[in-house]
Every structure is written in structure tokens, then in C-alpha cells.
Image (cartoon, rainbow, N blue to C red; front, side, top):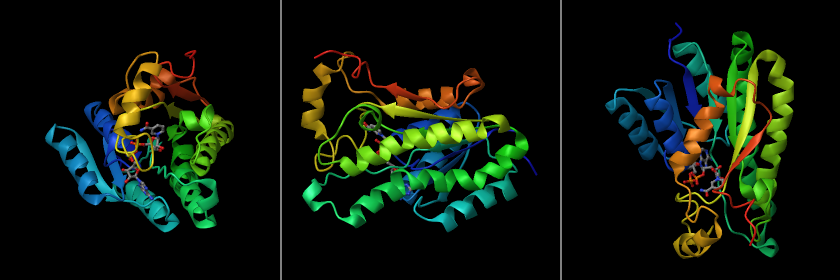
Amino acid sequence: MTIERRVVLVTGGGIGIGRASCEGFGRAGDHVVVTDVLEAQGKAVAQSIVDAGGSAQFVALNVRSTEQADAVMADIMARLGRIDVIVANAGIAHRVPLAALTDEKWDETFDIDLKGMFRVIRPALDAMRAAQSGSIVCLSSIMGVAYGWDEHVHYSAAKSGVVGLVRGLAVELASAGIRVNGVAPGYIRTAQLLSAENSLGPDAAELASPYIPMQRLGEPDEIASVIQFLASSAASYLTGQVLTVDGGLLVGRY
Ligand SMILES: NC(=O)c1ccc[n+]([C@@H]2O[C@H](COP(=O)([O-])OP(=O)(O)OC[C@H]3O[C@@H](n4cnc5c(N)ncnc54)[C@H](O)[C@@H]3O)[C@@H](O)[C@H]2O)c1
């Protein structure tokens, strides 16, 4: 059986940018496979899409597990018969000064923020190649494409790695009709950014806002809409790029 709607899988879809992305694809009429380690939040997102008249399901997926990633994709192919879009969004950003940065912490960040993307993309490639169509969108960061971030060197390095993943995969998959792009968000109002322990926190976010040319933080919907564009036929000739979406932060002069 193959359903008619596009099938879109989002990792880390329970909250933040992932949640906004799931809801956006749901509103657009796609079947959304909401995945996350946060089961209650992920189920609530899938339910809200269904309640709004859309099509969605929740599947638990820890992007650290190759077995889970392979099983989720095999199940999608068995039940739905297609995979059109992958949004590799799941990520962590933990503040750790270099002196305290253990091998385990470095590996955890890379395992989720970079290898976790590869794990979810790999089992979809046979189906996308067979369909000669597919779109993959990976979340980098301004901390991966332009800024250095003190006490987050593991995060910055992994998010820079996402740029290499996007470029390499884009070239390898272009002839198969599969496009691979990324988004590098600036300061977006989510749990990650508002964590004082691991990121800016609410106070620093307020202080940072005047230095953003648009004078405000971004909202998750404003990243989700760019992800949707990249995954749409409107971006049919766009591959291998990482779009910075930051309210003008990087091009501002302060
Ligand atoms: N918020 C920002 O300002 C900002 C800026 C630049 C980049 N980003 C990137 O955008 C993406 C989404 O960020 P956000 O702000 O919405 O973060 P968030 O913390 O609000 O959400 C992150 C999501 O990833 C999930 N996740 C974490 N570990 C996972 C794992 N092992 N397996 C599966 N899911 C897992 C979480 O459960 C959560 O749903 C991340 O990759 C982040 O690095 C965010």
C-alpha cells in the first residue's frame, strides 16, 4: 500500500522547532511521522495535527539508536509505502567548559547532533532512490556556520559538521533526484535557547534582542516555514545549501 499524501518524518518533533515543523507539514496536508524521545510531547503533537483534520502518527525514536532508526523507516515503508521528506532536527546543546569536556560528552553531542542525522537518513535512501525523489533538511546553527560559541565547542563542531554532511550528501544524491539542504537558525525562542544552564537563558535573550537587526528573537514557526520551503517543489533546483535564518544577525554590524 502507498498512501497519496507525502510522508514527512521529523526527529525531535515533540517541542520547539521540530514541533512547529510537524504542525506546518500537517497543515499543508502531509502525513507527519512525529518522532522524539519525549513520548508525551510527541504524542500530543501528532494528536493536535489529527484533531485539526490532518494526518499524523507518533513513533518513539532515539536518534542514538541505529536499530530504532532502521526499524522506524522499515515500518514506514511497510505501512505507508513511501518516505518523501526527512527533517533531521533533533539536537542538544550543553554548556561544558573545555576543561570539563570529557570524551563521553563530546561523543554524546556528536552522536545526537551529527551522527543522529546520518542514522535516520541512511535507511530512507533506497526508497528515495527508487522514487527518484526526496528532500532532506538538516538543522545546523549560526554556531556551526559563522560564530564560535565558548563552552560549547562540541556543539559548534557538530553543527559545522552538519554543513559538511549536507554538502556531501547533496552531491552524492543529486542524480537520484534527492535534494539535501540545511537551515542555520539564529536565536529562536525555544526550550533550548531559554535554558540559562545550557544556552542564553531568558535574561541574556532579552539583552541580545536589540543586537539582532530585526530587534527580536525568532519564533519556531519562522524556522519551520523555511524548512517547509526547502522540502517543497518551490526549491526544486536548490541543493547543498544551508540557509541562515537569523533576523539579520550575521550581516548586522555592531
Ligand atoms: N533554538 C535555537 O535558537 C536554535 C538555534 C540554532 C540551532 N538550533 C537547532 O535546531 C534544532 C531544534 O532546536 P530547538 O531549539 O527546537 O531545541 P529543543 O531543545 O526545544 O528541542 C530539541 C528536540 O530534540 C529532541 N532530542 C534530543 N535528543 C534526542 C535524541 N537522542 N533522539 C531524538 N530526539 C532527541 C528533544 O527531545 C527535543 O524534542 C536543534 O538541532 C538545535 O540545535 C536551535
